[in-house]
Image 1 (tube, rainbow, N blue to C red):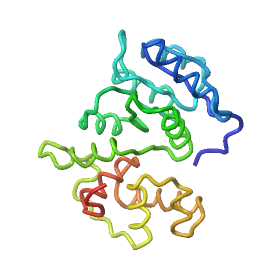
Image 2: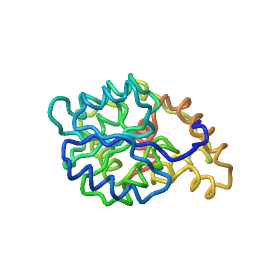
Image 3: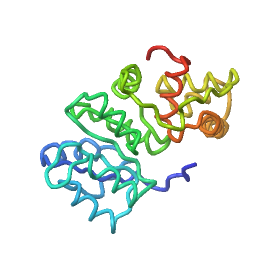
Image 4: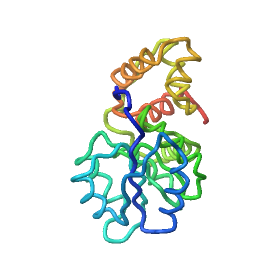
Length: 225
């Protein structure tokens, strides 16, 4: 569980477009609980920065010269396993979204997203590990329905027996509810909800929240999002 944040959430923007970085920086500078601590224009530049600058959340563009976001993602996770990574793109590629979330991305946003959505994604990823939206949820659903979609090995053949409370929490996670929102709806403390989420991962064999979503779809806990 994430320790209580002392001070603002520290963020690095990695994008090769100067104007886009400037726009995001200007918008987020209005938020007292967010602090942009550095900028990078490609994945290699970012990785070099991370060797000396700890950071909470990275906004990472997918398409960049020298080293793109797809190449940089696994390297960042090795270097900073606890840093949350929000991928930025102009493409709505379902197979790409699923692949990136399975190898460590915490969210996937369109670069046309307004500043409030970016702000909400940063806060949610920092506090609750993942930020799901219509794009990520539909990607998980559509890819699962394709014949060539391979579930993570740890989810194959597992049919966990979930009780009513666990099933309800899993459904609410699939509906993009935050830990606090789920806690309010099921009348439990946020700490208890976190414990139940961890228990769900153990019971289903999922290692990530994205894996739990895949499990929920495969076992028809949710049909559509």
